[in-house]
Length: 262
Image (cartoon, rainbow, N blue to C red):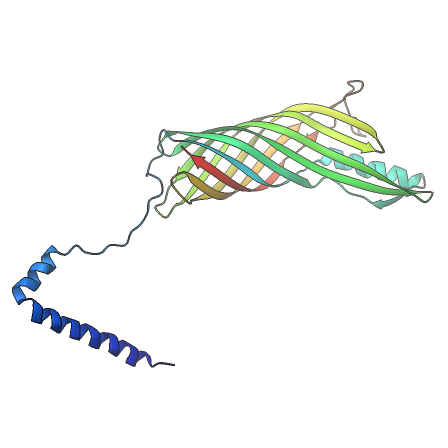
């Protein structure tokens, strides 16, 4: 261990010796002249993007996990399991739709210094597998829900010289190809439909260079397909109370992002 005062004193002695050597080499007038000509040191701070991104174009994507409401479908699964129990079939592992994969590809354009318009398309998918046992036989009912949102958002950006940017946005979406699928041993039941929705989002990005950023985002998505039809006979699916069965992908999404600026 070394005493801190002793360590500092060595540095001070070194500075004094160097100062004396400078005085011996240069006159007082020459030293003052060198001081006047010296450029003060300033820390280098890299501004990875200009303060305004007006006219900038970017392409990026999100990947993450989303929570899905799926109230009607989950209620139907629960009612179906109750019926099977009443028929003597053991429900080994009941499962409902809770959430699943979320991903998208988006193009953004800064038409004003702090405003960006984004358009893109995405894919959402969730799975729920229910296992049953009947007369020593194991049966699995595989469930899947999916949809392709096509969306448009308006974003407000706040830029910082540190390279960390904050943004918030909102917009609307068209929900294409909503799908509910149940399958078991090669047999399938499928229903499809479309809908509309909206989303509110907030996030941050870190600019690793003038052309690349990584980030994180939280989004609330309202995404409901109000009606789905059986693909075999085009019949509208209804709940036990007679109301139409809806595919509800509404919920919070947790996303990671990567974006390329041009």
